[in-house]
Amino acid sequence: MVQSDRQSVAVNFYVVSIATLGVVAFVLSALLDPLARANDTASVFGVIAFFLIALGLQLAEHRLAVGTTHGAIAFIVYMASGLIFGPTWCAVITAVTVASAQALNRKAPLKIVFNVSQHVLALVTGIAAYKMLGGLIPLTSLADAVVPFIGFVLTAFAINSLAVSGVIAISEGKRFTEVWLRNTWALAAYDLVASGLGLGVAWLYVQYGFKGTAAVVVPILFLRHTYLINLQLQNTNRELLNLMVKAIEARDPYTSGHSKRVEELARVLAHEAGVGFRDVENVATAALLHDVGKIYEEFAPLLRKEGKLTEHERFVMESHPARSAELVGTISNLRGSVERVVRHHHENYDGSGYPLGLSGSEIPLGARVVMIADTTDAMTTDRPYRRALSYDRVIQELERYSGKQFDPELVKVFKRSAGIRGILLGLSKRPVPESMKRPRRLGIRVAK
Image (tube, rainbow, N blue to C red; front, side, top):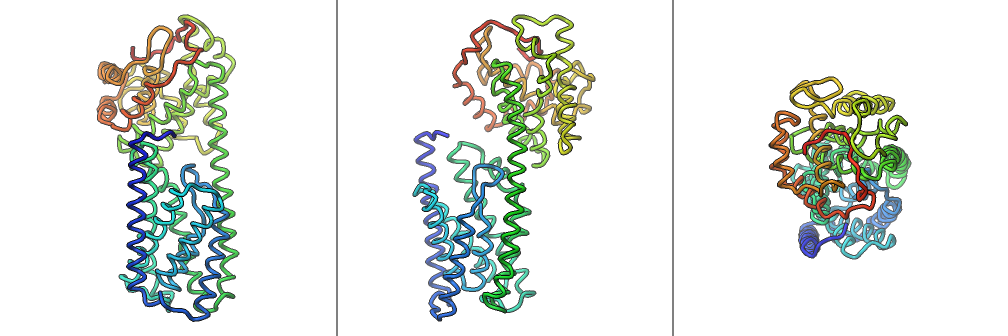
């Protein structure tokens, strides 16, 4: 995404702030950490060994499912080093590892500074929480270290996720809560559970030296491999869904990009309406797939037809939610809520919609969300017979049909959402595609 000058200044200020906090945390740890001045041979070789292991894992970093941040299982080694060598050497191992790996991957200097700083800040603060809860360094008892280590993990991951989500939100002009949920929630359970291996690595090193640590390295690599495969499958599945949607929209350039825009609007609206994270993602998936039934051949001539649809053609077109739901239902993990949202996204709040004429709360909440998102994108898209409506005009149309076509409560949420306003103001700058310039009209009801 191209950043504005204001965004660039904000990002630079944010990075400098995190870097300053990271430096302060490191200096304080160096002054207060009794292990910072330890220079026995075993400690030196241990620090070097942990650095090499962490570097190897960091270089094998993998993209997270959200696609905007990176993560590596090296954080297990960072945490273990903190429990063995103290916060200062933990910070040194982490900083040198992250900087080396990112430099080798030719990352921009600003990104290197930010990632080094936020890692150091998170780990040093996490170790401080560990010590405040009674944790010893180096740890002497596994049982006594469990509760303090939980404090370490929660503190470190909280700072890490907040810092990373903050810089992404600023650089991409998105709401912080939306970015934080998408970047953190889906992988939080894995990260928190996997971090427990850090305690195991530290304890085995203290008890048995490198022989004990080696016994944990293989499970770590296996865990990373399993996780990477899982993420690849998730990414592949999502890419296939996007490919299917693009294939459908390729038949009708008039609606190019429509489903992705509806997905984005639906995700924000569902989140603003207080829908839980997992349900938000289900609604977003349904929004992406709401028109997949149009891939059937019977819809092709209707999508290409210029002018109004006949009564029979309208009847055929109005079957697309059911056909879409049937197609979505062939994917096992989309059956249920996603399938229902797709099936009922053309139900009107007053019961005048289709396919079943449901009304009010009978309509799944997700379907009511997609109805507004779908119609909004139609209104904010240039048509041969009119230009895209402005944000204020869209609000007027939603208010006009509130309680008729749209859920009144969702209309209220829509009106007060700064996130949706930002999306729509951005869409108003889209160029008009050549395919839009030929006269045509689809017989699909939207607020006009």
